[in-house]
Amino acid sequence: MSDVRLGGDLASDEIRPSVEPSADYLRAVSDFDYAAAFSAIFPEGSERINACHTCCDRHASDPERIALRYSRPGEALREITFATLADQAARFAGVLSERGVRKGDRVAGLVPRTPELLITIMATWRLGAVYQPLFTAFGPKAVEQRVKDAGTKVVVTDPANRAKVSGVEGLCTIITVGAGSAGPDPDFWAELEARSGDGAPVPCDADDPFLIMFTSGTTGPAKPLLVPLKAIVAFVGYMRDAVDLRQDDRFWNVADPGWAYGLYYAVTGPLAMGCATTFHDGAFTVEETYGTIRRLGITNLAGSPTAFRFLIAAGPAAAAAVKGQLRVVSSAGEPLNPEVIRWFADHLGTTIHDHYGQTELGMVVCNHHALAHPIRLGSAGFAVPGHRVVVLDADGAELGPGEPGILALDRKRSPLMWFSGYWERPTPAFVGDYYLSGDTVEADADRSIAFVGRSDDIITSSGYRIGPFEVESALIEHPAVAESAVVGKPDPERTELVKAFVVLKAGFEPGRELAESIQAYVKTRLSAHSYPREIAFVEQLPKTPSGKLQRFLLRNQEIAQALGAPAPTDG
Image (cartoon, rainbow, N blue to C red; front, side, top):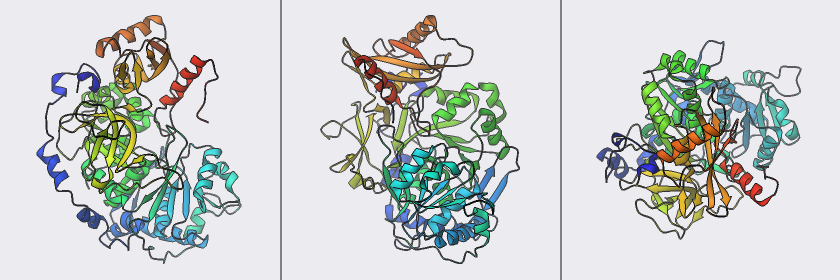
């Protein structure tokens, strides 16, 4: 693998050559025992499982054990124990049961990161029902589509989001936090406090669903999938080995529980381990983020590169107050640019590692904080123990080191893989014994995996295949660039040329001279064929509500302009 694949002209001590990962990692892979991992999470047996018991009730015997630290701007920190959460979940389960919720039914939460959200999730699981996350930034159309598709029976919301569910009032029951006695909806707390919470958790099977997720739609319409209870085994493995979550950590995953990374790893994973999680109910700002880290004593942080780049943009002075406090930081959602890794080491005094996964898989390739192995800037890391990750060519044959292809999971040799297909939708991602991720990667000699790009994001220019991630990583190292997106623009001579969309940092003005400076910088860092031949300065980049870059919108825009047609939208 060349330095270019790793994000540019890296120093030699940032790449540690190896033909094998460490003995520590190899031992974790060879010693992986699915039956033992399963029984550690579900000692009650495969047909007497309940997610509320696993993530809450079994930890409630210690009356002092904290389940949730709840932070809100201008208010004192609230700490909620597992015992209190178990009692409130049992009471609200009674509320849901009276509304007809039974095992397998869907209950949705359209509330921000508050204790009521966590109570709703646990109460749903207590009944053996299926929790459906609804991101609070969704508009009415997105909410309505997901509620209708899932056949949701109850939606829990709050006054700020109540109008978004007006289109489904006739389809399901709506319970509102803070509705009061005068409102048309049942009031969350009034209903909860009127119940005794006597019902026991409903026993379920390991293959029964406990979550219904909708993919973010980065490459097409959102598709529903059911997450079975056995996935919790994989979630805990990731928290233990990759995030290195410890009982004495102050853990904060800044991802919203309306999306997979937040729901899997800010709620399910840590609580299943009996560890406290953190909800911060406030707008994401640099000041609030650093302030919350300092005030709550956060030692273990997780989030997305989008969030971390905002912290970097604020400069070293803003980070100084928490420098050295964070033990480890984990990043997921999109590839982590090497510049972010360097900045966190220099200005926060901490190690940030890149992790790769999908809504359909959970996290499957990671630079593990708790397992020793070589760390390469620009690499997604190594397969999580319990998964066999391979690189396939267009014919489905496994490729060797240094050959770009599609990242795939070998289903027969990945006991932790729980995804079996989309719900009531075709699943073209399965080919033979493999699940195809749709992401182009490259394996190194030591079995680590480097992300190249979405298969439909790869740029073909003058016979070269160029991954947008490597160009974007070089772009954001330029002192004027805050964010970037790179796509292939149709070109009659080169097939495609590299075009960059650039968001500038404060204090810089767009212009030809700056564009040429950026082009020269990238050409020096990468190569003559990889630098962006066109640069467009923009105020913002198109992203999903969860913060993932939507290159396909920019690419479709360029294709439409080349054809002289109106630019398509994401619908």
